[in-house]
Length: 263
Image 1 (cartoon, rainbow, N blue to C red):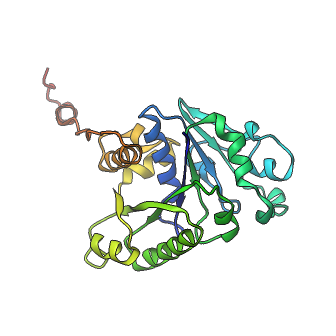
Image 2 (image 1 turned 90 degrees about the vertical axis):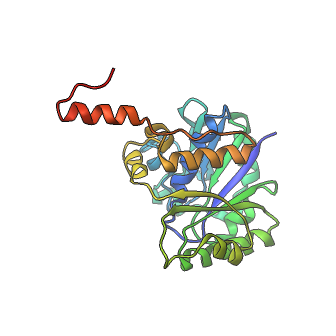
């Protein structure tokens, strides 16, 4: 049975799209076929994050130009597909979210995967929220700032009203700071469990510049291990964190200073 998981955030800039991409690749490493759909009809950038620049056909074309959904399903690597939305305003201005049938779109794209990640627009677009399939689950992404958590609370309220099952909260780009909210405070405010904590990691910025996921670029980084653990928990799999290869690092340092590496 396929699963549809909406990745939502009340506030922009919390790393929702980047998390969607990295989570999708992580799930594929557990032999799941993943399709990521960009539902941010106005400010889409899943195509940019995934390295899929200027695709010929996008979801915009499907919604306003009678193009087929299978024309805009792009396989970016084994087991990972993307349905980009595009950034062309000449098509966007003709969209009417009230008349978009996400149920129809999901039925048409069903053959391409078993786990579908919906990259939702930031904020609360009621037309988009109401349109997603009723069987969908939701993960709410937030940072540990008060404003981000307050907006996440609004996401929760709308999702509850629409009877969308919220799996939990992912605390993204986390860093320790006494002026930020604690785990306990966030769970208390949102009355939801934190199911993943992804630490702030400059390696993610490097991976984005390359159009690759962090789990591919540096599988032993703290953020990669956290994302893989989140993916494993979502599908009920086990995951053993990958430790950095300290011997390899030491040998590279020895070579750099002119000392022969250990054999």
